[in-house]
Amino acid sequence: MNRQLDVLFVSPNSSFQAYQALSKDFAAIEPPTWALLLAQSCRAKGFGVGILDCCAERLTVEESVKRIVEADPRLVCMVVYGQNPNSGTTNMIGATALARALKQQHPDYRICFVGSHTSALPKEVLALNCVDLVLLNEGVYALHNLLQTNLKTDLSKVRGIGYKQDGVPVLNPPERVVPQDRMDADLPGSAWDLLPYRQRPLDLYRAHFWHAEFNHDFRTPFAAIYTSLGCKFRCDFCMINIVNRIDNADGVAASHSPNMRFWSPGFIISEFEKLAQLGVETLRISDEMFFLNKRYFEPLLNLIIERGLKLRMWSYSRIDTVQPHYLDLFRRAGINWLALGVEAGNQTIRHEVSKGSFKDTNIRQVAQTIRNHGLNIIANYIFGFPEDNLETMQQTLDLALELNTEMANMYPCQALPGSSLYYLARANGWPLPDSPAGYGFLSYESQPMPTRHCSATEVLRFRDQAWQKYFTHPDYLALVERKFGFEQRRNVQAMASIPLRRKLLGDPPPEIDALVTKG
Image 1 (cartoon, helix red, strand yellow):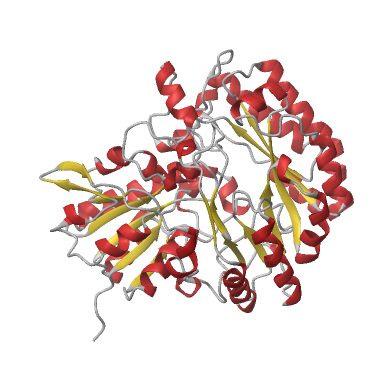
Image 2 (cartoon, rainbow, N blue to C red):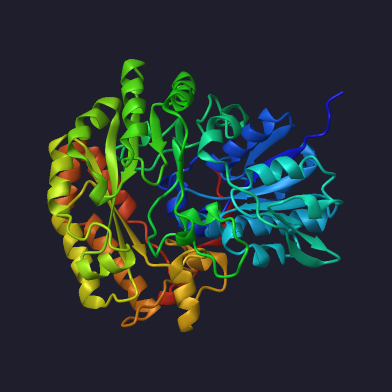
């Protein structure tokens, strides 16, 4: 007789609210990385685990509730992360909707939340009527210890959790994050076998459109993997490191925990080989700073080459960490794209928000060097930093058009919970979104942070117009056609023809029927 499942890790579905009509064909569908890591970690300790990926299966709230009840776990753990910096907050849309429905229909289920938004605002998340427990950082050790209890009594003894005592939220002392010397042992890979699929493993997941060179046929099967966790830098606009926090005090920002930890190259190559055996060729290296520490990336890339793995990959790098003499190694290992955080065209603004980073780095020269080695670039730009005005935002757009990289992300600046900007906005009384959807870069409810010179409406309007100008610009479309082909150019044009609707700009809301679109 099978014992009851200890924990079901649930990845909620917020795709339509976050990406609007782009969610149907163009937005990526990534494997739930932290659900995979936590599931494997708990399984290694002898607990019975499962994963329900509501996003990959395009489940409605009602369908998700039914699946949870069928699994009948002791603990329902909403894993509210995401690979974009804002995803931990925007994914609260689907997580809270599902948790409310489950709690209303089946009040006896114990519901736990973990993720970057929870780490940033644990008291606020715990105050939700549908939430019984929270994990206060990445939650690995807290979860192991929590699952040894009956989930109701003796909770005061479990470090790193929050719970309710007689209806009053209580935060226990924090638990440590997994230290460097325990990464291979206590976070022993990903539970790939627990993911859903249609015909073959990972075929419900699809790569970013540009990662597949704007060719839909290359997008699946797809996987994303970390080789390290965290980041050593302290950028004001980022909240990635908030899951490293070991301090429950109010006002703790991600910049207080600039912590990086690495799996060993020998351990990680086994994960790459597992994915290759599952038929994955398109792979994202999700590390915030993969191109940083040669002690880890160099042996791993050499192992990929030695094992003959044929992978189509991309990874992040900062402008000031690109090391030209390693670019050929990257290309030979299969890393065809580098994602660069350019952020702003005005050096003074870039210097301010990035805490002195790449002040004297020649962005144009770095971009040309990368291209000379045969790699493509996806450049990330942010509009609406605190000192931005219409002129400096135009400088950012002008730089993007000049660099004319193979792909560009253009974000409105958000004061994301957990970031230093969030606390700056609160201290200055700047308006913040009143719902998770307001933090979505591409959502209908998107509400950027106003600058000292521009309103949130002006920032959002400028960002949307800049995006349209870039992706319809003749020089850019000519680049896509020259590098990837005529059909790929047409695919880009099809993507650019899909309008985003914005409440802040007076647009009507997207059609509600799209919320339940399958496929």
